[in-house]
Picture 1 (cartoon, rainbow, N blue to C red):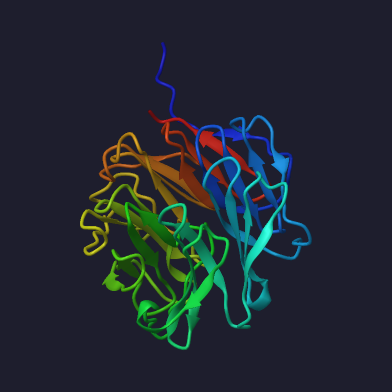
Picture 2: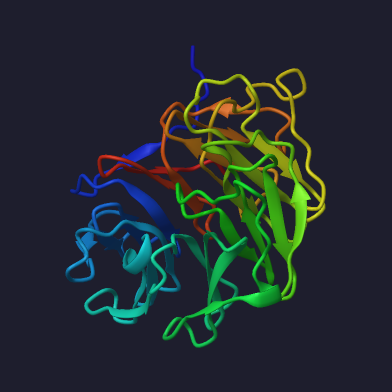
Amino acid sequence: MTGTLRPAWRSIDTGTTDRYRGLCVVDSNTVWLGGCDGTVIRTADGGHSWVDVSPPNTAELQFRSIVGLDDLTAHAMACGPGEGARIYRTDDGGTSWHMSFQATDPELFLNTVAFLDPDTGLAVGDPIDGAFAIVRTLDGGRTWSLTGGASAPTALPGDGLFAASGSCLVAVDGALWIGTGGAEHARVLRSTDGGSSWQSHETGLPSGVMTGIFGLAFADEERGIAVGGNHNDQGASRSAVALTTTGGQEWTIPTRDESRGLPCGFRSAAAFSPIDPETIVVVGPGGSEYTTDGGASWHALGDGFDAVEVAPDGSFWASGEHGRVARLELL
């Protein structure tokens, strides 16, 4: 008797032991990873070999978010706080790095960096004086400036962001979304004008201390997913996902009765297949799941990770603690 093989993560040896919360999959060959011990590594051959391309003198930094534009150009964001909140840029595959931003405000804590196009990028930080900190570049990350005024989205009392997976800020098709937590409501902030103005929408996901949205993913301007929960109660029975088909303006939280195998408790990141937007993978330290029907049913993958991204060929990549990286083929 033969059976159908179930999809499973295929482990990839990085030869390192760092915890990789920063993950960027450029294509099926090129992947950049940012680690919590100041480590940046890169593969250009689909994970067969990895090169340590860490910026010099950064062992005390945590690279929680990384954006690789190609096999040579990348932007690595260290979270901070204060002078430890930095962004480094390389255009030679990590052979050399330029520190293009360093915070001067001791309160600044960065969470994620994302690019709308090769020239325009934003990094978002925890609130300062009632507004989320936005750091912006218009020259491909060569220089960055801290913006304020009306272009800085308003924070609620207790609001914060989570640098868990480099995905609490995402940019897709010219739109931007930020996922919040810590306050009374877990919100998604949406901008369609490059971050000049923001609209706030509640998701219904749980929120509070160490609770809220930890990761976002969008297939296009309309279809998206928010994942999160309570980081301190990862075994909770409540849904860890919310879904939108209106660009983040309205959200639906499925229940276990409505969605078989629903991810519950806590999840930190998600990714849509570029081949089939009904296919989504979600991950968290405690486990991972996938759906091929837009969330109507889910299937457990077992292994837990911090971050997940997808290559243009539809292969999913995930990263986490102890140098762990894995690849998943669903289509």
